[in-house]
Image 1 (tube, rainbow, N blue to C red):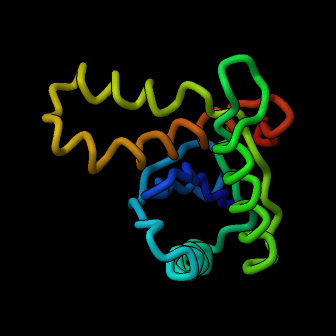
Image 2: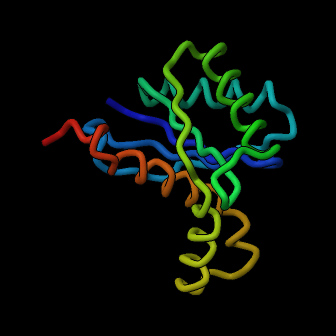
Length: 141
């Protein structure tokens, strides 16, 4: 079963997809969120193209673990996906993924301009990898 991982932000959405067995994640693209309807349409195209059966959306909780405005926006985004695509959509804690993505890219010597272009996609990969690694989702043993 292919799963789509999304890292929604104010301006961009990082997109990753699992392999058919749900073991690995690879980044696909970054979608502009300036026009929400167009972004949802692009996610629908990707979901159809990859035969996605589930979507995982990063939930940017505060470091204390409580919800904030960004978390509320992510939940609204997840609900819009449920309505438009009719697929199951789960939220997953992603407090440290953007920072981890940035550190990974810096350690890899990626220049600042290029980091901006790929950070959201890498964050989506990290969100999806975290989800795939959860024991309850590990159905390939």
